[in-house]
Image 1 (cartoon, rainbow, N blue to C red):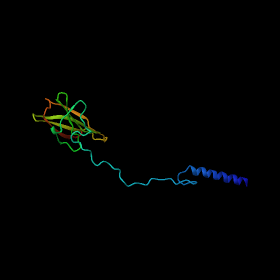
Image 2 (cartoon, one colour):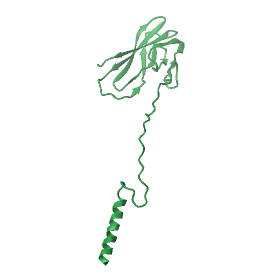
Image 3 (spheres, rainbow, N blue to C red):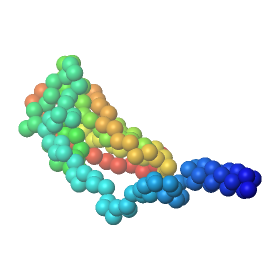
Image 4 (cartoon, rainbow, N blue to C red):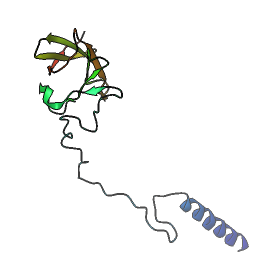
Length: 165
């Protein structure tokens, strides 16, 4: 009889130890494990970019440069959301703009026209690879050397996209 009591006690102890190590069942007085309920709600993403007209806080001209007045910048050739800040450096013969590049694109700028009334700057985004590409987006400052100081001329901004090199 004594052996039967020892065997039952040992069996109960082993059962209790085994039950404590499993999370599948409630066990002795424990609460059932909680599982999060699946959600059907999609994560919210921004629906639009903040306006980038003029000199938004996100695109100030670099330190030590002079911003060109908004009325002297024609950015109608740029898509919505593209930086429109234009500046001059030094004696005014260097003009700067922000380009847009990232993962598999590289931005450059060139003066395609330098008339008495206006200067046309073309920002070119060149695809450098067919992929895979990262989704990063950068706005590097780009500068162009003019033949003469910008002065009162209007800066016309244009954008071009070129396929893989």
